[in-house]
Amino acid sequence: MTRTHLLDDPTYSRMLERIGALEPDSQAMWGKMNVAQMLAHCAEVLEVSNGKELKGTPWFFRLIGPWIKRMITNDKPYPRNSPTHQQYIMTGAKDFEHERARLLAVLEALRAAGPQAFRHPIFGQMTAEEVGWSGYRHLDHHLQQFGV
Image (cartoon, rainbow, N blue to C red; front, side, top):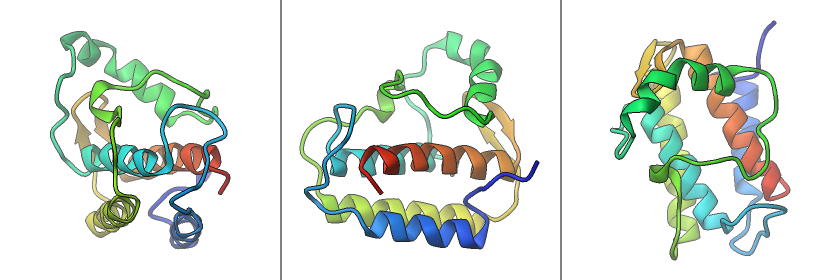
């Protein structure tokens, strides 16, 4: 089965359109984050996929990493209000335009890295397709959260 992923040109273009459709006052249909916090959250997740250090991970997460990897790379939609790693929890004021620009830059960096394998700090070795698919699923989940 071929999956939609962020390295696919039409999918990437559509994601950019959806991100562009967000407004500073876009309201979430579920969850605690506002739109700027959501953009920061998505950027942070993709930055780790691009190689940024993941801080504050309990040791046992590395043991269950392969199980979590199967959860993020499967075809089931993410449940609403899922638990979040502490590094990805965004609180406090965030600047909407800054966080949108940050997310767009992170997406571009992911695309620029191209089809290379990557070692995630929790999930272990991931193919470009797994990174692109899991990134797509996560971003799609949050864009749906804000109605785009």
